[in-house]
Length: 266
Length: 300
Image 1 (cartoon, chains in turn cyan, yellow):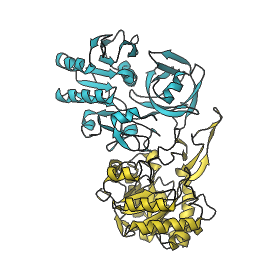
Image 2 (cartoon, rainbow over the protein chains, first blue to last red):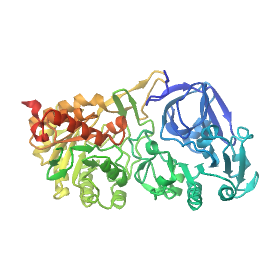
Image 3 (tube, rainbow over the protein chains, first blue to last red):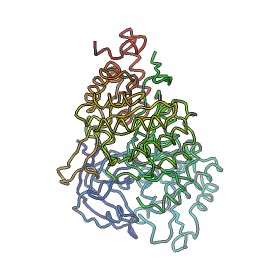
Image 4 (spheres, rainbow over the protein chains, first blue to last red):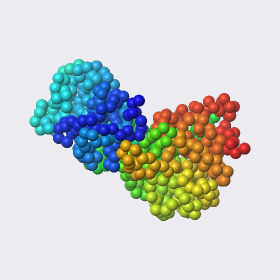
């Protein structure tokens, strides 16, 4: 019996923790999970909170999520040790399609939402951007891949936005499908670049969630329920979602700008 | 075949999106209308912005669905700007409200009425918050809430949402009918709790919560049956309705409309179309042309 696929947290022991960079850690479990790239799990830290996390590693023996310490919950996750227990439920949501001639463009820890996709695709072009060299994760994991890097400060790869590299790649290479995850401003840029170049795009969105299975209604982006209709949306869907790149709902359900959404602790 | 009306409001079918499920935003209410709901109920709003509880706020184990979301909401003043009006959606909207004090119940009712919803549902029975007074358990307080909401609702019909966590729901139903309620919504969730043996802790962050899902159905059927026997005003029967047959049984207990909430989890947002189709199939097979023919039939 696969103990993960139930909608109550199943308590699992952490088998391994991998330091990925500055406050970014991958938390591993010796369990199988029946998931598709782009799907997510709800991670429950008893006594603290429960949050959606992308499945960032998946093999026949184990799976992991990657957390970046920013808020109360992720800072508590950062302090965990192998052997500590977490509750896991899921996987939830719709994942990415798996198309040929693909480019995966990620920003910051958004890379953890597309990493299992990269594992499944056949030699995709990876364009990866972050604030600095120290904010890049999984570099060893992708050292044999076709990887282009951009950093804001130029400490690694191209100095500037990763979207500049995307524009160049779309002109020079035969790319038919773009996949993206990162800050929503970046994804909106990616979406617009793809629209201009008539290339299909799929983006993985992040919103506040209570349930993960289409009940609480907090993750709505226009009339789309991010946890069940997404979190991955196609360009065709995004075109009908004016709130994409503009606004999000706080835990209370109040609509605010993306900037205020990210500045509000949950 | 499924056309129904309640308090003068016409519906294409008797299924209603229950309060608390997805109805946080206007586009989500409209979406559930397009998914087939006959009417849609907003998530309850009060006079102030509330973040609700931290997670875990809900989980499911078989036929039990336990939640303690704790009524998060943007607050009525913010909602007035967000929703703008409630009479321009594809289906009738039921505005759901509450307050902590009688005065707040009145004020919030007046504000939601300005958005022109088809009906106003007064939530006196959420088991996951402290209202300040036990409106759900006191017939006299429930009557006072009903009176003040009626006074502030103008011509908009008012339904009072009752709790199953009472000694005798008939007494509560009688009290709100006498106070002028136009309808009764029954029931809210049943209080419950779950402890995880591995962590030795309650699963819900709020420790206790409310049970919904198929496990709640027999409780809801019994409450609606008893209320139908006691009052003349129509009932929105809510609790555990997941299939067309469940809905038919709820109508047989005496419900005019049938609330559907947690079934959105069990069967997805298209649950309304599925339930309606199943109701029609049952009705055709049993040669029932209109739901009036079977409403309250279990009492005969």
